[in-house]
Length: 211
Image (cartoon, rainbow, N blue to C red; front, side, top):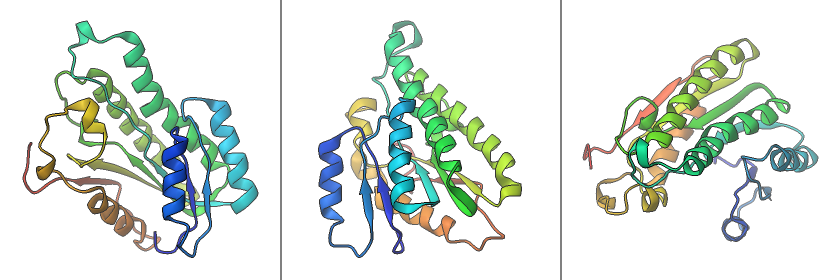
């Protein structure tokens, strides 16, 4: 983004390696380090490597997130509930807490939440709960970090053409969705605002409306 050096992380090491190869031609430094955001030790290892290579962090994008198959509450297995909450909420907390140790005034945190942070979709109890709770965390962070000059943006995209739909709703119409690049463009514009302005909540939806 705009010539930024990058720290990339994922649980899927092969996917991480593939993206790293794609970025190899860019004139930037790229640190690709596997991490399971549910695991405090894994997050600590990621940020040890980040501090060694970059010393500070200017932008954090909390993008890790999973969904679950469409199931009513009475049929939703607890291990599924737990995995979604640990990834979508606990992971955001752990990564943000570690990032704040090396983020200075002028930094920006973007939490990718989904419109499920303010709406309810039947059959998605764990996903809805994780995103509602993550919005509460995001809003709390914003108030805590105002005086430190760190901006916090809650990103609430509508239907976006990513792999999460394979789990969430395999039959969903991809042609009506936004591309990830469209959402990323909106995020970049929010980050590049002058220091005395911020987008607190960014909701971006497909012009096609509902799927």
